[in-house]
Image: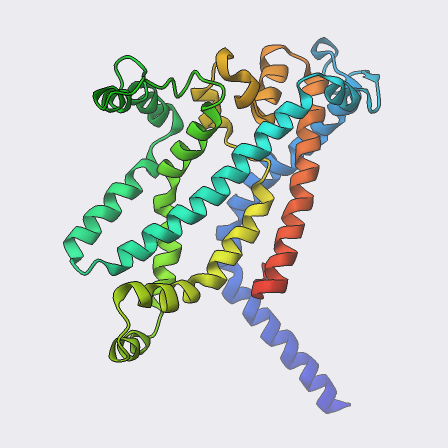
Length: 313
């Protein structure tokens, strides 16, 4: 009994000492937790608007008319509802696939560069667009993609082809959105893959060179397989973002001419809620997107654990 009590006292002292040592870390975490509660958890109370005919004059906590699932039914009864969902999926999935391919390809190419200064210069150039907001980067794109004065169409006309209205043709606009997003963001994605490549045993390259493998064969048979797990992990974790097609980008670039192929869930929620003041409808669509995204995120983490043994705890 005495030994048991001593062990319990020892555990209590050890736990207390551990808590005291970690207390500064918990205090540092506190502002982030408070911010999360204020901006992420407290606003969840507003989800009730999705089931009401919300009238702002009555106040948020005032007596509002309860309409149940009417706002959800209203959205799915709209003639453009499924085109909005289709546009969102097409653009989001296109971004995921093209970004993955471009980031992996560029990472392999960068890994083959032996001139250190040139490699750093190239990396700086491809990283730079990531740090620009879409307001600034979108303005640049509008200028360089202009059908009359843009640099891109200037080159197209110089080789004898007709100018392309990248931001005004509804058939081309989704592809423009995908490739400009990849241009802006793929640079940061290469960091993960380059870090994976630096962890490969140099002895593998040396042994393959002795066997007569050239640089291309080394990249295909050594570098790419070594990147396989992280590529799979990145692809699986991207499942949770399938309904995030890039609100800020499309809001800056789209217009009435491309609405049929460029309007996505987020821009629709913005127009219905803040422009047309249909708060119940916009909240209902937001809830629909959040529920689907949550399911996809859980699925993504489950698949990542099953196939790559990645855990979030």
